[in-house]
Length: 383
Image (cartoon, rainbow, N blue to C red):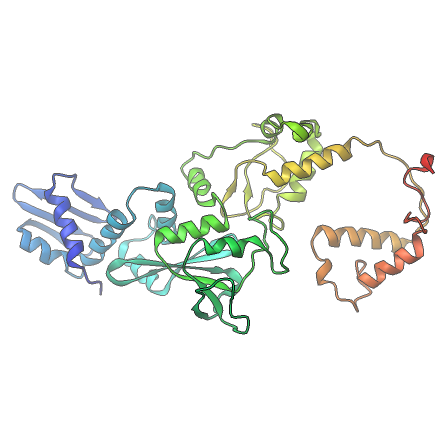
């Protein structure tokens, strides 16, 4: 049962008596006619020729009240300023797919939207108000602790989540990973867990998301509206200046390797939409993220600068003394480093090629006192 506040009914009456357009929103139809007020909803039936007193009474009926509170929330509380915010909040409760009664029933249990490594849960408050909770996807089902008034001194002994209510607190949470290392790429899958923003209004919920994943809501909505402005690799490379202007020389096949190295789901939670250039798509998988990547980021450009310089080197033929197992071990080491699995390999697991002790054994056996593999110098002519 949804109760309608007097303030909400007053807003409805004001809308109809102010000379504004009739109301036609999410199944609620209301208008001022020559014969009085007309009001209808799918579940509440149709009313015509209502006096203002009758209109006020009808607005509180069971089949009408949810539509009135729903209209008030979207038109008076959320409003139309900030179209990206409004679009995301509508998306968070499947407003374009479900009727108002269906949504209200689902919101009672909470409607969840995954966004990168966080999940946004929309719930129904009193009088149709919406509240939003944001937490790490790894923290599903974990209880919330007391509100973390001083975010610098979280309760380290508590197993409950640290609670926050200020979107700006997300800055600190997004800055370092769980090993205390700086996160230069906010969309990397390395966001720490153990926190919750558990009682946000719509504005603060979207602002919090924008701190965790800058511009993600706006770009998601621009894409949804068919208005995402994508800047492809060639255009990005051509506009670089200074020490970065050399990335324009990176061969096309190397751009494929850049995308494979940096722009897959295991490294970045955005979905790559930029290609080599318009009409020339990269073969590398663009990922399955909820929000798009509209242009090569600064991290990709910086990496491409290094690889452009490396690509200028001529290849050499080297001859090494390795056993078959040692060759496979080197390949396993490269795979483990590239996939970020080095920390997962246990010290006792010497069957794993990238095991630390096994790698140290290989170095002791195959490196000379100058650090050359199998005693083969990198630049023989300079020895």
